[in-house]
Amino acid sequence: MIISDLNKIRDNQGSTCGDSSRISSDICTEVVNEVTSIESESSVSITPSGSLNYIPCSVNDTSIPFTNQIFDSLDKGYKFYKNYGRLGGFTIRKTTEKTYDDGRVLLKYFVCSCEGFNDLKDDANPAVKKMRIVSRRCGCKAKMILKYMFPDKYIVKTFVELHNHPLADKNGRQFLRVNREMDISLRNLCYNGAKVNIGSSKMFSFAKEMYGGYANVGANLRDFRNFSRGLKLFIGDNDAQMIIDKFKRIQQNSEGFYFAFDVDSSGHLNKLFWSDVIGRRNFQLYGDAVSFDATFDTNRYNMIFAPFTSVDKHYRCVTFAACLLSHESIVGYSWAFDHLVKVMGRNSVVIVTDQCPAMKVAVRDIFSEVNGLVATKHRLCM
Image (tube, rainbow, N blue to C red; front, side):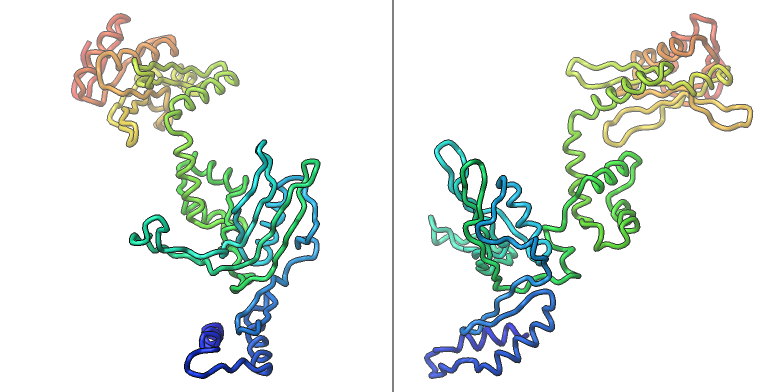
């Protein structure tokens, strides 16, 4: 409200209506005191034209840039100014640079994110207007210019700390883009949660409890979702190779772990079988009758998940092995049963809980050679 009134007074100065009065010193002092009480995190001054200038006052002297300050690289200078903006309550961005012929940067500009204005007209075609977007650019002049200094160092050529817009206070700094960053701890937390099928929203709530509040997390829910999306895009077409590499690492640490896979002509994974040490041991104890159910289907890959299970002496379900098949065919089921017999070392009665004809034929072909019995859901057959 105060700023809007000052803007009206500034616009009326020197107008054609004959009102060319200036703001008196008493009014200026009263306005500055009132605005300063509101913006306690920044020092506020008023110009003769009636506009307000803001200077961050909650930053330590060691974190404030100064003219002729030397940095070892552009990246260190950028991080220093970024930290200054984070403490001061504003966001920075990189802009214009001048380079030598060999690619070395001569001048580099780091400015406040509110620098400049959004031009809604196209210079090449003035009749065409650009799409209106939400923007906070208001022509802020705060900036830091780095200049190259031999050998391979950069010096602060210009530093302007005055802002023409209010700065974020202590409670609002958590929403600044400069403070919204997924550090390595948050990335590991989100990645580990994805491995156990925990979504981004729950992981963000969990991080809030760990750090003691949303303001201490350093990122918001949108950042968690963006990282999760980027993680899925990074996996991309390498998901099958990742599971094979993981099985190879497990096999190096555990000699009893067994897995087998098959790919089609395009190199896509279409068959995968695995069994660990506990599953193989359970088969030796409770593998007289094995239940094979292929009614489970994966959502994304459209592959059949078929576990080999049974019950122990306490009537609890135990799993011996499992497989993923892209097609319910005689070839696919025969491939899975072959590896089951190979890894377990002996045959058993197989109880088929699915009425797939291809499965029945594959079971008969594999287990009839060793005089095994095949029990279907409704009848027992040789």
